[in-house]
Length: 433
Ligand code: PMP
Image (tube, rainbow, N blue to C red; front, side):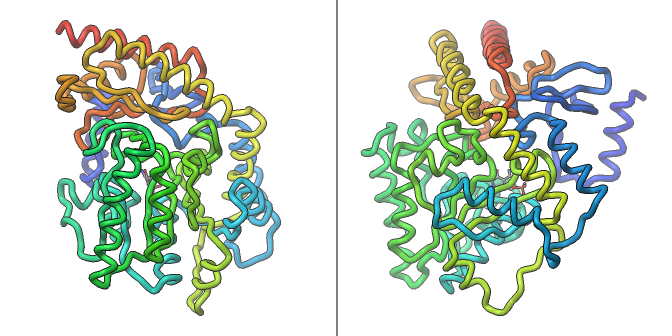
């Protein structure tokens, strides 16, 4: 048996079977550096997927910050310590002034779970409104507010205390277009959901949304949609929550936050994935009023959240983003990548849409440009063949036909060009069979 077969057999025997592996030929990755992953044979793979390794795989500065602090001390946050405070200071400085109180947790799911608890305690209302196609995490309540999960295989359907607003998808949604008028059509529907539920005594306590819905297919909603959605939330007394787990920390290029780029004003922001460059870290930042309402006598304690090692790592990530100019780099490289992919669309009929912002990009593959019928099979083939050529992509969206591109921000212009060339070559070969 090969090492790969041994690993596959052990994995099947030892790990829960509800976890999938990427690619037809699974990869045995043993090392990462910058935007590259290296397999056990030393072969380099360009990572176009991993938005967790935000400042690059195994970034020396982050690794050193974490290991130096591990050598010194790691405890919970019931002692005074400078690092968690400097970190909270740095994070809140990146946010609008009204977002001033931090909670530290260990994952995006923990961040969203806490955000829902904050909103529920502050409003006294358990109902949550969510956007169609969304995924917000792996806890029971988050699965219940994630149409991607409760409406998918194994899901139990929508519960009575969950409200689903339409996804403002300019390419596939009921209303097409990218401007304010299209946003207004989606917002009228969102308001009808929120107000209808309020009238039957189920006013939402929270409205949770991503500025650029990710698993829903890297959808860039029309201008004004998120801002309008959060206004609609306030009009029924719900707390607007921006889930920045995928899109935060400069990935969208024009702003540190995707909600900022969308001109929206959340009262809770949740963060995960890129925040610790792979170290398990998450954060929730909210208003003083919500934090005070949550302090109702029941302590919120999180054993690992905000520990000095995590804080040192989080600080190092912020330093690297600043010092290496990664937000601006994401803007410039993202523009180059999107332009390159749009040029391909002029030659490949299968590319129905190219969308994104900064280094958060999607390619919507179709069987027919007029009907926009999704081509999941082509998406899967493209991911598998590109992986054989050392370019790692993933697929997502409700029809599994969207290529998701969200690489470490150190992705270079040459990496972007290579990605475009690979997509060009593979689509060409697959089209001619
Ligand atoms: N929110 C969004 C938007 C996500 O995409 C994810 C994970 N894919 C989560 C929350 C949950 O994060 P985690 O897996 O770190 O718990």
